[in-house]
Image 1 (cartoon, one colour):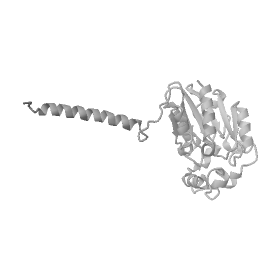
Image 2 (cartoon, helix red, strand yellow; image 1 turned 45 degrees about the horizontal axis):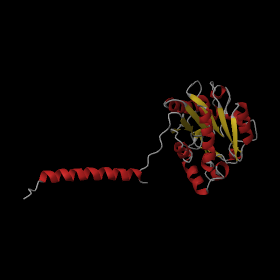
Image 3 (cartoon, one colour; image 1 turned 90 degrees about the vertical axis):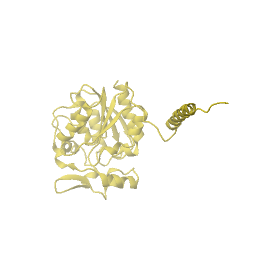
Image 4 (cartoon, helix red, strand yellow; image 1 turned 30 degrees about the horizontal axis):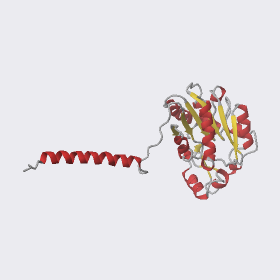
Length: 270
């Protein structure tokens, strides 16, 4: 007569439990419920994105996934918009925190910021100006705007008691993001980050584009920065230039075109 052994049964049950757990983890990891973001390739530079005035880091929400899918490590800096020196210091800290080579991207006012923040950093291999200001030494944003006809947005800027500027929410869609859906433009208007007016009158002494290769995306239907001014700046800094028929927010309305320019800069920067 065979003797019943609880020890053997216990051993068999433990083996079955362990096997089931392994199978379960395998099934879970290959299902759509658990999907890791692609890791950046060591051969690709890190990408730092810097937002402009009347915006924040979520401006890049449609561009970031495209870059990450292609294996880039992306960081969107959150600058305070309290002064140009403050913004440069914040962006510089984010850039210096990256590992290896870096491509730095700035939109609109942030062109000023990356021009200062990347200066003198040998790990920054390329600058990308997304319809952004590219000042020279001692040149303010206001100085640049005076070179060509004032853009339509100049009639839509309002100031608060502390002299921080924002775009009139009733005019935001028309003057800032006319090719974005009305619903998304309302969210952008409601979450816009005001900028200290003094930032537009402050200057830089060290200029990154004088020593770092640059790319420039000109937005042909821009109502916030005159497209002719964009072309002037792109030519002056010797940037490789692309044009797109976009409003002031191409990262929302044309994210693939923006990502393509950034990746072109990244590839050339190796």
